[in-house]
Amino acid sequence: MRDISLNRCILTEQWKYNGPIFDAHTHIGELDTLDKMLEIEAEFGVTAQIGIVHSKDGFLAAKKEHSERFIFAKYLSLSDIAHYNVDPVIDEISRTKEEGYSLAKSWFGPRWLDYIKDVPKGFRIDDPRLEPVFQALEDNELPLLIHVADPDTYFVLHYQDASKYGTKEDNLSQLEAVLERHSKAVFQIPHFGAQPEIHRLPNLARWLDRFPNVILDTASSRWMARELSKDVQKAREFLVKYSDRILFGTDLSANRGNMEYFGERYLAQRILWETNIQGKPLPFEDADTKDSGGTFINGLDLPLSVLRKLYWKNAIRIYGKPG
Ligand SMILES: [Zn+2]
Image (cartoon, rainbow, N blue to C red):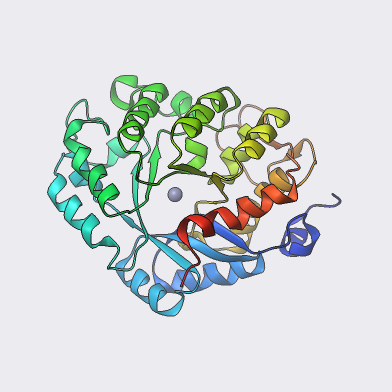
């Protein structure tokens, strides 16, 4: 493909894939920021999305005015979960669907431990005391978008204190133990299951083979571009083999709504998935590599049939058409 620039990205007909885009991982806040987000997304062909709700008012307004494009995700109370206080969480889960949400969200990026007070030492998400929460998700047929662990780079740069944050392997094994016990709930594990690093793809493949209820999203354009570009052949094989299980997602947040911010992230993923361009610098700064040579995109040139599933069909199959 020629001359990739932000303008080219807006002209969706320049890409291999020309259809509508479902963004399976966005964050939405107040209504004023939402309108700006929708305006930008329209320029880039994003017509449906999972909106992780951060404001009750924003949610109610979005539900009223934009129900035709949203699947809503509700945060479970992290502080209750952190203290094994499961009853209010179970109660929340039982009401989630009637409130207009389609899935629940929980976030265990290791730095969550810095935000919640007095987390019991040795907290684990696979602690038997949390079993009723996962059981309630199954019973209510409520999918869970569950973020566990973080990029390998974060464990090097930010989570050196393994006695506090655990190792990455330990974080992943806690989630695996939960997946083992709950084969009925749908788990959307964002950020490629926190395992887009080439050396982790075999483990991620093992999860997908073992747990048919697990799906992935591609949120964080930076992380996907950085890691999957490191071995085009292995990454491409993975994407093709598991093409029914991977949903396009960005992690874009309505309150950061400016054209450049959104556009650069769409651009990075579109180059990665759709083109055979090699060695393209990431169009924005990658804080994790800025002091070690930067991040470069090597396009995977995925077949159109795979792109259709990635950008649209998988999300619609799993969550239905919004509205
Ligand atoms: Zn997110």
